[in-house]
Image (cartoon, rainbow, N blue to C red; front, side, top):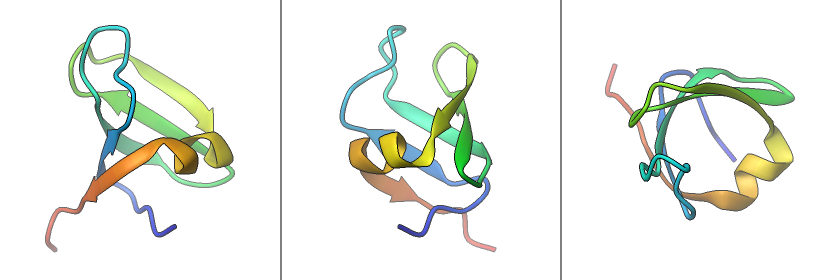
Length: 61
């Protein structure tokens, strides 16, 4: 799956704050995600994130 820095990921399940959109801050074996609802940052394994992605919004360069 082609996930890049600064992509906005829409997930199948929402964060406990109710928002289901996350900004990608770091890419590698783990993703560092920033919740666009509450601002919480988390490190999540790539395999877990790739299963739960609904759509990817990419900022045009």
